[in-house]
Length: 47
Length: 272
Image (cartoon, rainbow over the protein chains, first blue to last red):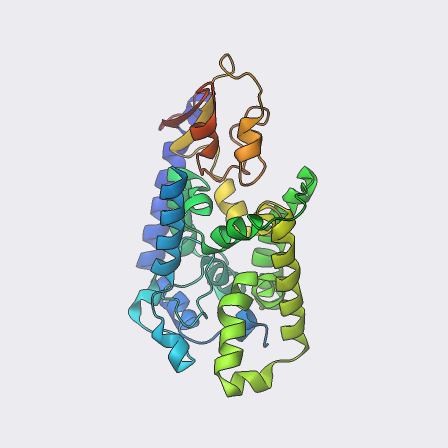
């Protein structure tokens, strides 16, 4: 357990990098893109 | 150091919002750069914005994503957090920059109770994930996000007659929230970051384990209170845990400490 906590920064970095790669492989950015190119009425307080 | 930080905040404000032509057109940028999330709080419906807002994207995935959490956005933010914790809040957030500028205006200066600062975690968990999942609506953007109102709502309603016609009670509510927050920025240090910002709450979770950290030499510290006085978020690094999610890594305390008791360290392992 102590060893795990000691190396937590590296473990978290690896997990986050893996998550990013998984997101890219699943092409999640395309869903985010299709959302971001349309004017968001919620962001503006219009809907 | 403070001058470099101001240059950095200005640089990132323009880096996130270089498409000024959008203000002339009264519409938003639709190019391929919107595939990428923005590290700071910056509304992607701002006519000048070229990146997707990470909090907007997280709410979208909570509502409609296959796994309810976006691996892409969480991975992107997580890597930044793992490197510097809340460093984006201190160096690369346009809204944080605005709050620091407004606080310079002469007015009575007040403090925020620590317990109120926990509210940002409630906003992160409830509004960004839980309520977005159940209602399929981005409620943080809808009723709170002041960046959306100031960067997208006001300019687009003024520039676009179709959008102007749509402004109703919700717009008045969001405008009121913005005015309240802007007014509070005269009296409190970075009130939005400390009480409501879900992005700051998310980055703050990484402060304990980030590669770049601040450490206090307890033997050198004379508890003079300089660090608390200069801190843009009223965080007393000499008293509180160094791992606190409140520190925005501006490094002002390190620069101003008369005893040199605060150090920036870069470590891949936890030592305390």
